[in-house]
Length: 267
Image (cartoon, rainbow, N blue to C red; front, side, top):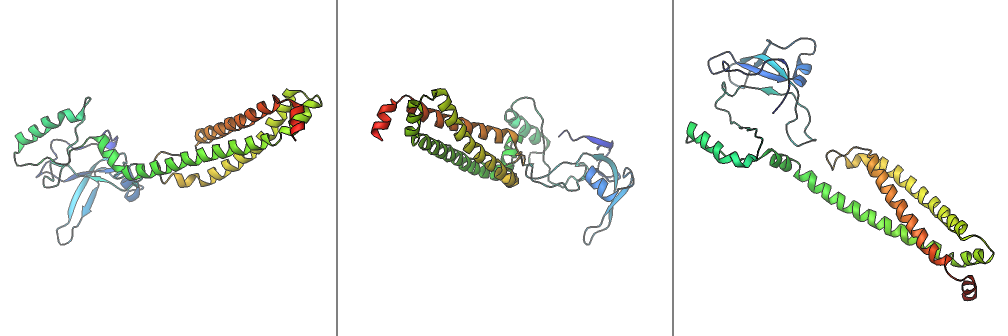
């Protein structure tokens, strides 16, 4: 598994049945139960209910790992026992390969069968499959939340475009009057953009504040999502600004191409 060894050693060929019982602990257990001393060569006692007390010699300390759901499982003290000293325990065989792990499955079954034809090999899966099963529930939640988020973004963009386009369209008479009075078209267009962007900026500012305040809730649904994701906030804000520019430019462009006399006569 590539778990780093911090101190001491791991299990060796001599750690078998009949030899002194040894264990390896993780750094979390070492800090919790041996805060001011080196636990190497110390003994850890276990007294099962109704059984004789058993003592294990600590021979190594390894880095702490999480057992359980990816990104969710809490850190807990871990003890590793040598399989050679506890052959009755259920064993999980882990095989590392540079190629397709599924291609080795038949070879692994054959090797186990050669050792013991009565030994069953079951629940075989790749590490990718194990990780996928671990996060399946959270992935479903993330997909649901992501779908609603995309829908919300689409509705926000559609609403923003509609409001700004309608606001500019209602100012067609005003634009015609300004053009008739000799105001440059570029200046009129800039004024429309300025007023539209002020509203958009206020809305985006309020949205960013609310999203930052609510972002810790997302962390519980999606593994690997930080409470404040700058790239996501900047991306959504940029998209909404682009839509706002388009919503201001298209109606303003149509309004400025209309003959001012026709606009005034129609009004």
